[in-house]
Length: 452
Image 1 (spheres, one colour):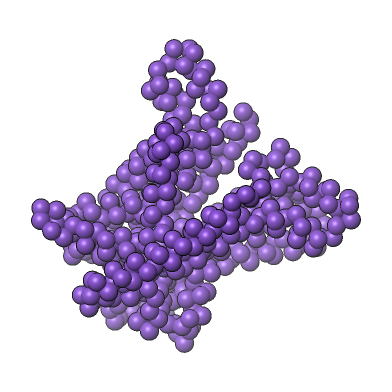
Image 2: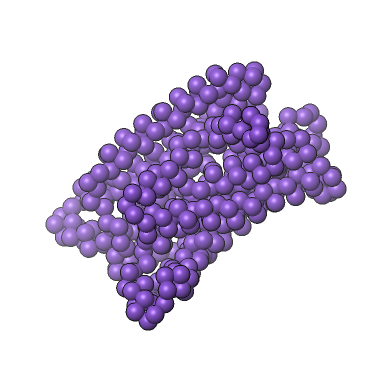
């Protein structure tokens, strides 16, 4: 997929890229619900189902990360190798793969981390028979009351992921990958019929794989007892508890989409503008990646369990936890744009008599505005679909949509199951809107840069 996206130009390329990226922004509980629907019942609660669901969840992200680096490879390197008689396989092994080494390693590490800390997919699709560290932490803390055992498992998880991050950073040292996009695009139009068919088959298959589970959820939400009906949707919008859950979810999302980009912007500014001694802030913001959402929820409960700071049931703790989960993403969306601003622009503004605040407001803020909006959209998506920390912090009467979906699925009755699929469809629709907004902003930013 990365090869097709990075080396060829074809119709509906942006739409295809957005669709392939869709699984990665879907809430984990939606992915679990989707595979409950599309897989036969004899594959439920199996290792195959869990592996397939996690492949679905991460393949688009890996393709886009590797494809983005592939675009940085200058096409003249390929041309020179072919002139010297290199075969396509030789070109791949001697030039392309070495230049993609860092992005492949980084993608592998992130995918491993996401699978290792997966909670929603395992809880919905795996059930009690397929326990992982994440589900075991929750089970011990909330069902058995064994907080010490849960903390021990959480510490073990952090040590393993932290060790992998350190090993990856050391392995990536000295990398010679290009970091700026070449002036000549390596994307070529499709000409040969066989080539066009092969590329389009790959892209269409990937897009279908990404869309099919979401479509299955939507269809299931309109089906009850093998008959078409909108009863579940009518019930969803008439049920006071579900309406309250939807309202709470939107409120938490609005708080998160304000708080997380604000904190991410502060951290990015301190890292880029501040003293070198403040560079450690960048490392601190990666902690929510190393520490899973389940461990964050457990940590909040343990930390704020004593008066006068017994805030375990406080409503503000949930959006705060969501902001912590979203913070690494927001900072890494804003930081590269902030870092790419030429110092000459700031110097020219200072020469013209602008203060530091005026320079930042009129130059930096305008340039990073789209990145901040993208960070806000991603933060809202994270909040709406967050399931791990919410499982610890949500209280009765303040449930979020993922918690409500889990509760409905755990109850017998086709009507309740259909309502769960309707709510999952709502979550998926918001995620789809998010990815298209972010991609549209990114494309507009690239067009402005190219005109500049």
